[in-house]
Length: 486
Image 1 (cartoon, rainbow, N blue to C red):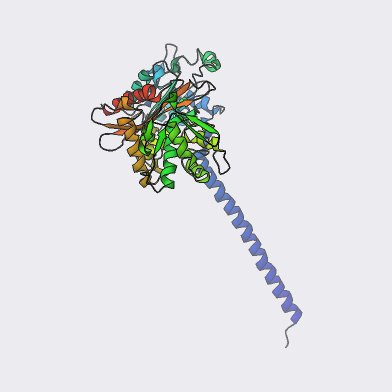
Image 2: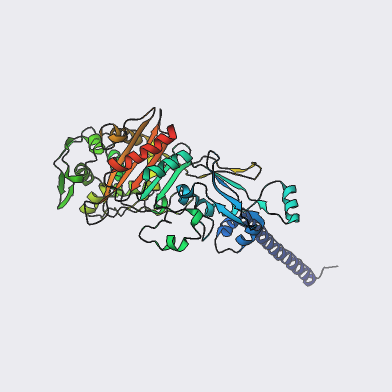
């Protein structure tokens, strides 16, 4: 008996529809499963990463809830000195105490009126408690506050105090870093303020536009680099000549003219005959204008950008971005002005420190950090920061030459005032950066590194309106170096 072909077709059609239906159900199931997994991943990311940022936001009202449950944790120096702590008052409340007052003002910050510095960066940590769970539950049940976690920093108390005393009442900044680890050792900015008085004098501090005492000049200051930028110009010349500069020579008469542009030496000094190293050590503007006139503009721009100009920095704080507008189309005057660190080039002290640190560390920049570890109230370590490379900024075959020239600046050049050292050697570069139409006014710069056998730490100093970098900024750096090596 023959089978009905129509019946067979109907059966096959039904089976195909069933299979298609199952496939569609499977697709929908997998889609929802994928969305669920994505939601779990995002929730985990938010909890572990984003939530800290969100909670640290000063507009987040959850902070008030955390402050009602926790005693804000302490901030400590690398030696364990208390930089910020919470004390109880006579009325059963609490207040924040900063034992070193103005000395660590900008880097430690304050915990009211928007929060600043480490107080802001680790706000969530300081209002969290990872201590003994039994004690935490007991305190919660009894209505007692738990002590927040403590933040241990990389800051060196002796170096910070030395910088504070050496800067005296000058305006400017000092910043220091371990070139081998990336640990930030010192951050000073002046004018400053007493964070213990922040609530009572907030309007005064905030409205003082003449002094801007709340501005952290070390990170947010933006200055013409002056002759410290000759480090970058020298690097480009070394690169274009394969590291061999033995054929360079220049007769300095106190000024240099090229295609209608004129560059004068600082204080119209006449340096006479100079080779490349002498030009750097004596910081001869005329010679470096001559050097700049020979540079390939496009290559020079690439070198500048490779040193993190016009781009982000690997820093845990807010900072001002360094700027340079050199390009293949730059005018002759722009090229010469940039080559001596003037014109429209701007940089922050911490950025100059990073470049200096990379040179000291054979071209490799370590990722900077200021938080060494997080501890609970019992001293248990919750988190420890590891040293990490950020990347190579400069080929080592060029850093060897730069280090040699920076040593000559101290031995025979513009930073001879800091040559006499006890058990360690300083290398560096001074700078006097014009910042107004009055050519007699200039910021004083020094950036350099020091070590007993090889470079260990780098220090950068700027004194606003200080004049000579060798006379004003370099001695300040020397006192900071001394504090580290004593």
